[in-house]
Image (spheres, one colour):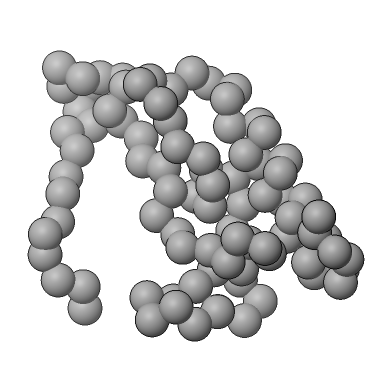
Length: 89
């Protein structure tokens, strides 16, 4: 089980920050060359790849819908090339 500190975001419709603070991004640690997901101890989880905003990219000051396309295309292609055995570069 993970230990504190834990954080929470008020994502209610009456939140002062609504809607900007109502999403999370990132969170998965990946191997940069392939997009394979790593465990907390750094070991690769066999067969598990991450793509899109859960694997790469951070929002700057605010998020605008559609900015994630490049993150999805790049990281999805990176994972597919690794699975196919191709050089990701």
